Amino acid sequence: MDNQDKIKKYFLINILLIVIVGIIMVFSASYISSKESFGSSTYFVYKQGIFMIIGVILALFIRSTKMTFWYKNIYFFNGVASFLLMLTLTPLGKTIKGSHRWLDLGSFSFQPGELVKYTLCLAAIYFFNNYKKYEIKERLLCSLHFIIPLILLIVQPDFGTFSIGAILIAFACFMSPFPRRYFYGFLSLGVIGSAVVLISAPYRVKRLLTFMDPWADPQGSGFQIIQSYLAFANGHIMGQGIGNSTEKLFYLPEAHNDFIFSVIGEEVGFIGVTFIVLLFMSFTFLGFKLALSARSKINTQIISALIFSISVQAFLNMGVVLGLLPTKGLNLPLISYGGTSMVMNLVVIGIIFSCLNNKSQIEEDVHEEAPVFTNRRPMSSF
View 1 (cartoon, rainbow, N blue to C red):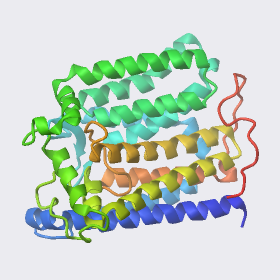
View 2 (view 1 turned 180 degrees about the horizontal axis):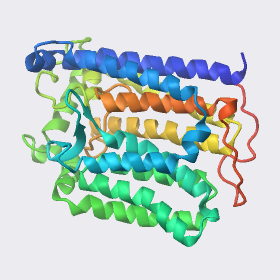
View 3 (view 1 turned 135 degrees about the vertical axis):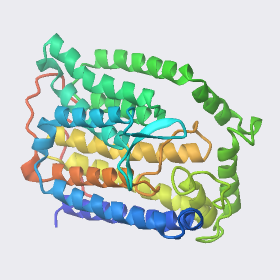
View 4 (view 1 turned 120 degrees about the horizontal axis):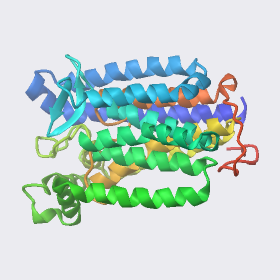
């Protein structure tokens, strides 16, 4: 077994542990509300299990395909994902709490934003690696693959996914041979634009002010984060025990979704929270080690960006739940309840393993300045 195979094994074990923790905590956080709303204490965990199986099947399928196919046709797939995102604004969309983020498919809902953030990521890698090959008109047309989805995410509104998408585009640009002088200029414009989007909606400003002082409106906008604080305070070092959270008893909204980390803090305490943080840190470390082992610069960029996408969302969610960041509609990847999220995160794992397949190495013809990770040494032992 070579070094890459060992890291693959550790990486898979790490993912398995995260998913197992997720299934246990989804059941623990939801069984009371599930029984109250649907007459079955296993309603949410049963659906989560089904979506997990679907995600594993899709991941295995993608793992067996050549990454070249997906990469060369990424503009088409991103266009399809953007079209699905647009459909959320039509009568086919499902409105929840004022946001048009879901497509109603009868027995379940689909959230196109979970798909778009990954197609955006791959489209950005393709665009920035081919930037100097494009004529000016082609550059403008291809940039619509970023502009249109980001605008649709703002209109929904889904500022959380918009933020992740924008961060991933910047990350993909940073790793590519895109000229540095342009990169920092566009990055500055992006930060200014994001700030304008943030303050353009009163509810976003209110969220920001709530983050700074949730006790200013403890029964309103500050209620959720205060309940999250109480959950962590109740957990102490060892926690109250699995299933013994009190905050999930209709005190903490989205207990099995966006704020499942609070339930983890209350039921398994500081020890459990530290374990989850270490799992995601290991996921990030092992994922980047695998990226460095890829035999193509493009494959390295793809793996790095996908690992970064899951990791940054995980740590943003933890930051929100701990009160370190303003509240956003982001769940904890592979742990929070959410069918579309679970499927897409597992599909990402399939893409990563497809990139590590020797037959899936994407050849590039880069004549620009060297990107990050070029001229690297062989992967050191782990």
